[in-house]
Image (cartoon, rainbow, N blue to C red; front, side, top):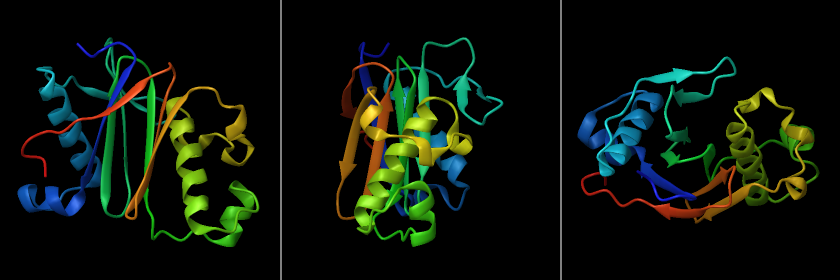
Length: 175
C-alpha cells in the first residue's frame, strides 16, 4: 500500500477543481481529491465515518487521512498512521483579539497564520479538532513529525504521529 512512514499530500486550488466539477461544498471537493489520491495507489475509497469529536476516518482500515480547506485551497493528506493537516490563505487576517487568546502576543500576520495552522493540524492529528484548548498548545513541546509548506499564497501544516517523510502527490488531471 503506502510506503512505511510516508505521508502523501495534495494541495489544489478550488477554482481549478470548480472548472471541472462545478460548485460543490468544500467537503465534497476534499473527498473527491482524497478519492483521486487513493486511486493513485489503486485503492477504492472506503466509506468515511466521523468520530464523536468530528475527525473523519475509515473504519477497519490501515489508511489514515485528513483534509482541510481555506478560502481558495483544499489540502489532503494520506498515510499509514494518524495524520492531521490544516491550510490557510496568506491574506487571511487574524484579529488581535483572536491572536491574543489563541496565539499569544505575535504581531506578524504571516507568523500568526503559521502558528494557527500548526496548532490546528496538531489538534486534528489527535482527533480533537478545535475541541482542544488551542491556546494551551505549546508547539515547542510537540514532538510529532511536522511539515510546513509556506509560499506567497498559503501556509499548510501537516503532522504525523510517526517520524515521516512528506511527499507531494502529482496527479495528472487534477490541475
